[in-house]
Image 1: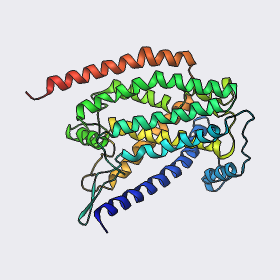
Image 2 (image 1 turned 45 degrees about the horizontal axis):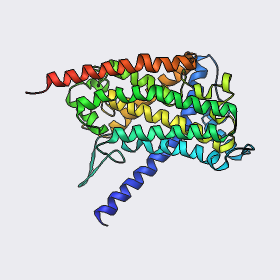
Image 3 (image 1 turned 90 degrees about the vertical axis):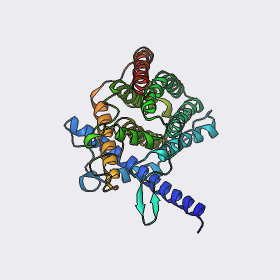
Image 4 (image 1 turned 30 degrees about the horizontal axis):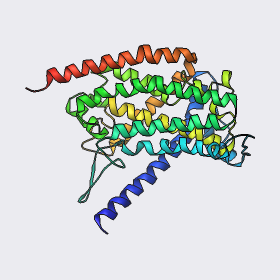
Length: 345
């Protein structure tokens, strides 16, 4: 078998495995959210389907498959069907450039614990994440419903408000690492001596950028307190009001997979990614540390949802432009000054 064929086969196998892991993680992230919110609110949560309710995601999936799917009169049928697909595909491919462990040597071949490593990996993730917004907007417009249309418009305005601050908050790690490759950013954190015990990272030198990125990523995935596009008290269910069955489930699949993706991006940029004790000696430990860090961020996101009330629409817009954007710019100026004055002559 030629080297090109081996590389293609390796990428195909890793892609299939990652898709399987993400789909499984989506199912059990929904289950974990229901159990954690129930625990925080002193309730039981799902506990009927299987031991401790662990088969609840499977039961929900079967129910969604067999539910009747309706298309409203007056809807644009092609866009109505295409919108959920356009939303979920970017969520599935966004993790392609995230390293979840160091390179592993198997015999004479080095296996990269990532589907690929490109020198513009961060730009790839940003561009793919922004595509999903088109699916939300098209879902709202094509439904021929006022509530759905308002949800889609809110999503557009929300994206403009937070996406600039999100992008600028990433500039700091890029400046310090000197690369847009996510693997290079992880290695740079280790080389700078910031990853003691796997708990360090660029958050030590860039706390403002770290916090701005976290707040913006909550808005990116429409999580509380920034879930205005689907505010049930105001818009029934927002952009997916008219959806049912598997098309409805695809929107939630996209949301929860993107939760995993942005959590992975956050820990990679600011918390050393897969780094931790003994990773260099036992590379497989990198996957364990990576999963544990992502799980901790997901727990934090669920905790915030169960704790904080939804912001008003105008409050989010004002907060994004008047608070987050200036803070992100200040952080970039500070990091740029650090790079200039600490650079070797």
